[in-house]
Image 1 (cartoon, helix red, strand yellow):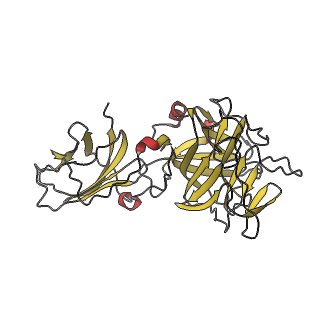
Image 2: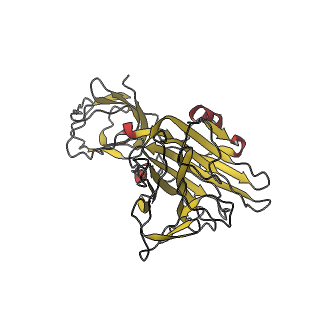
Image 3: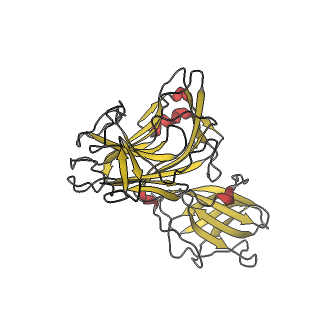
Length: 384
């Protein structure tokens, strides 16, 4: 076994400018047991119906996801709730999810929102008409017949259906974006508050598998209201926009992963898997580099980063083993470093300068191809 130190020169390297400092929260469920969820989330509900699972998205860099089960005979809501001491003007939330075959219609799902005053615990925010100074929320939803992905919102300017006890607006996708069961989806949505508070320039957007499918704001898109549902249509007037708040104190201060089914059939059990949740102040996108990690296991070989010398150390290679490729991925799976070597360049004492970047604090994944094998290793950089 030997230690190889790499001081890497950035020549013909693909470097992604996304900063991990934009990430305010992440959860990949790579934990020893589900009880550890209570350490990271402010509130968990129905933990008995949650389990860690080996089922995971093809592109995930980990080995686990969270499985949530809903039993119609014991219809208890399951959720993970996280509040933030600091409020945000705009947040993006990205997660992966998969639904079991013949899944029942979902009644309540994932959302970003605000409670004023801030609450460390979830509160009822549906079937309540916000007054502009108490609450708002918005996020993706699956239509009741499980045919498409839409957006849902609770806000001070929302339309109320007089024939229904449901106080929530839904915004339909056009064309409809299929919401199939037994398939992993990468879901990302964005909520932006209105500023100033007297305006309606707030926004709400949705991406499915990296493609923007809906974006609503002041003056876009064109469409029409039918009771509490908004349908895009070029033949109608522009959407009026969101006045999420009428109080300067209100900013986005919670994320709620909520799994509830109101009208499940007696005796029926539904299952959802969720993985790789990331909240950021910037757009996130799907995990990259998925083809690299398929069918490859994490190695016992370790990779360390020395922030003082700006170098990588690879520990555990054989003496005659030569590195041919090295790729570095950030927490989001974005490829930030991509190097190819010839065998003549890399000898047992090779050093290549890491000249133009230094790694931010955080978790990374390193892919290495040598003359003998391919593997990946986790790399945690904590310079403090």
